[in-house]
Length: 199
Image (tube, rainbow, N blue to C red; front, side, top):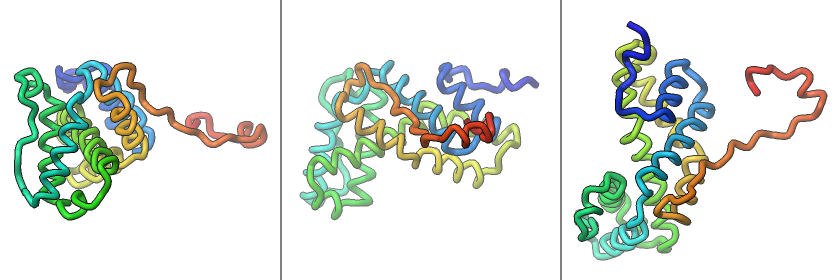
């Protein structure tokens, strides 16, 4: 069966590039570049996570009060239906449950950054990586543990954290762009002997 028949229909073009990168067993840093681009495009199309700062503030209040669970979902029906807002709430609840003491002590800026990074990583799974995993496993390209480790390495990339910081500056994701991949400067001599595929 051709690979195209195995691509989940719910994947957009940007996420299909991620799938092709994973199918081609590209290195984690190269695949992370496509994931960050896909995430930025997805966040723009779903209008970001406008409630993120408010959810982070309530998360930190819950941690300081010693609460383990709670709902920080905004009151409006539209916000409750918004998938990134729901993911942010679940991420906040997970952080309170696992890092309550740390959250109670950090600054509000650090707390919202921690939440934003967690939300962006969770959205990478929700919008793409979790949908691709069954395809990759069915094709036999990865074993379960290998795939889990590879995906964890991809979402641990610094560009994911940088995208989270950019999202904090624009919670509605208007004009959000993926951070560019910095390449080390090469001398002319290095360029003449460089592997073209590696560039």
